[in-house]
Amino acid sequence: MTADSGTHAGHGEAVSPVSPRTPELVLCAVDEPLAAAWTSAVADVGGSVRVHRGSVLDIAAQAVVSPANSYGWMRGGIDAVYARAFPGIEQSVRSAVLASYGGELPIGESVIVPTGESEPAWLISAPTMREPGERLPADTVHPYLAARAVFLQWQRGQLDSGSVASAVRTIAMPGLGTGVGGVAPATCARQVAAAWQEVFGANGHLR
Image 1 (cartoon, rainbow, N blue to C red):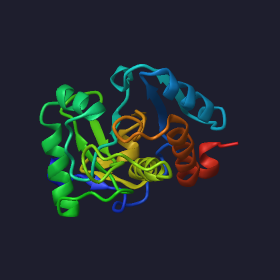
Image 2: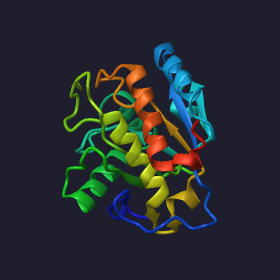
Image 3: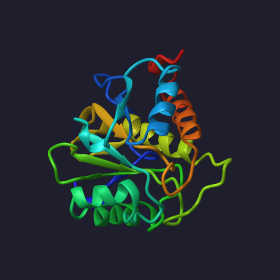
């Protein structure tokens, strides 16, 4: 798959019946407030969702989530970590955004691009802000929209080799908007849980 052929949640066909109903979702936090918020959210979510206290890159996952901006710049926060770990990933994201969206990826959509590594092989870019460094308002719903885009990408997205669901068993997700965006950890955690329920419903075994 080339960067220019990156797929997104709005396109693609239904997941094959042999695919699992949900991915394993690993919610990652390097600081205690976010870890505590994730843990509280997981208490209300059954199924394959767990919390990891540490870097998103510690996880044996096939995909990692980039809560970037709409233009695909990856210069700060976790995106800068990805840019160092996966040389050329920023250009791959920007190329996919240009090919599928004309250069600006709307909040609530996502693209998936190869990292160039065997694991994680894929990066899902789902913006939480339009402009780099944007401070989000307290009543933002962008973490929900970004998480929903990630889950729809897994559920509906297509790669050159087949469905995203068949290629990705585990997704490692950092906080969405909790860094530069200034979103409260509890707000982020609640919205990610709501997005999981919205996309997977009973299949996600939410109580």
